[in-house]
Amino acid sequence: MTKAMNRKIAIDPVTRVEGHGKVTLHLDEHNRVKEARFHIVEFRGFESFVKGHPYWEAPLLVQRLCGICPVSHHLAAGKAVDQIVGVDPENLPPTATKIRRLLHYAQVFQSHATHFFYLASPDLLFGVDAPAEKRNIMEVAVANRELALKGIQMRKFGQELIQAIAGKKVHGVSVTPGGVHKGLSKEERYFFLDGKTIPSVYTMIEWSLEMVQFLKDYRREHLPWMDEFASFPSNHLGLVSEGGAHELYDGKLRVVGAEGTRVINDQADSTYQNILSEATEPWTYLKFPYLKSLGREKGWSRVGPLARLNVCDFIPTPLAEKERQLFKALTSDKPNNHSMHTHIARMIEVLHCAELMKEVLEDETLDQGELVRQGEMRNVGIGVIEAPRGTLIHHYEVDDNGMITRCNLIVSTTHNNEAMNRAVRWVAEKVLDGKPEITEGLLNQVETAIRTFDPCLSCATHALGQMPLKVSLFDSEERLLHEKTRG
Image 1 (cartoon, rainbow, N blue to C red):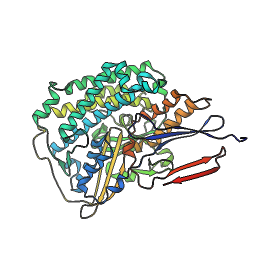
Image 2: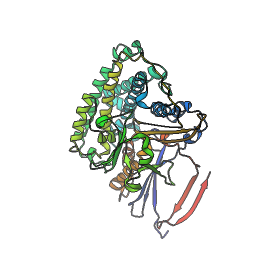
Image 3: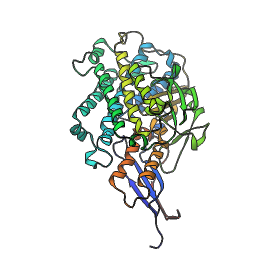
Image 4: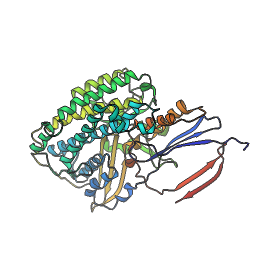
């Protein structure tokens, strides 16, 4: 063959993430990176098949999007159907709000614990050059038994609390339009307070502090890698509550730029359509959200723990706020654009959720007062919360009979789509570019970069449309030689 051909390297599947994805790296004849893409290859169709169902089924249906963060979808849909029955967040019964918040804190707590201990910790403990059989939770347990045991029990604590509130650890039911089905009795609360059966919420706070310290120590021992790996500037999107407080359940949309400029200043979440648009690409089923005011090229944002710590002015619990201040000092109070620091931010949120769970569990009124309210019916409901992975938007429109006519879901992983692709490109250019040989360790770094975002691909792949399998063959001058499509 006289003409040099492009090389294509496929990492398929991306491992230790929720769902299935594929990365392709397109190299030229000199082994330089020509293109790097993170492909989402699953298809779900939730936005389509919830149409025609009554609105009150939405909180039950959409949590089947995922077995990892079903509570997030349950609550976001619940907030949306509240509005359909005429109840805004501030008008929800106080007890119902407390129960929903407690459920949400338990979900974020256990999800973050799952990601860190089961998915990310092998990257940190063993390094990106470790063989595949080494990078798993069982090897973590062998290498650091105490860390693994605490991680397992922290995850269990969150799941037990979810079960107490919603009836099941996965796909339970708590939300009903305008409120919740049940409160939490004294006996149920004390199960998590007294430490007799499982480690108490006070122990969860103690262990969370230890995990934050573990990551701070890890960063100091692994400079400059932790500060440089997959680091790039971006906008940051998240919810804040009164006074700019860190918020997980109900707040206003705020966006800050890479240098700290306020791009979107605390807009009502119901106005998201005026703020965001979504682009599509032919090579993935995952859309690319962006800020209308900045356009497709500059308007993309990160969401999730790192973004939430960047957009808020303070965390309203004392221990987590102290850690936030130390975290912000790492970047001289400027927004933190270091992808690997997301792990630290995630553990600070674990600590925050532990403090919040303690506050609610100590409340003697969780089995008192009304649980459900209703107002005047509406035809539109929009629910926005901060899921573990970032800002989650549920939007429903119904006809006069209460049947869903439109559903739009923008999930956290979708918001992070551009950022994940940029992370892949960063690794490809810094680590793979110009190398004569692709090693297992180098490929691991691509996965490590993606994993910092904790993508939930099952949540993200709900787009409408067909699902063809297309194979295209190009020469070194990008001329199409052959193409075949199935489906």
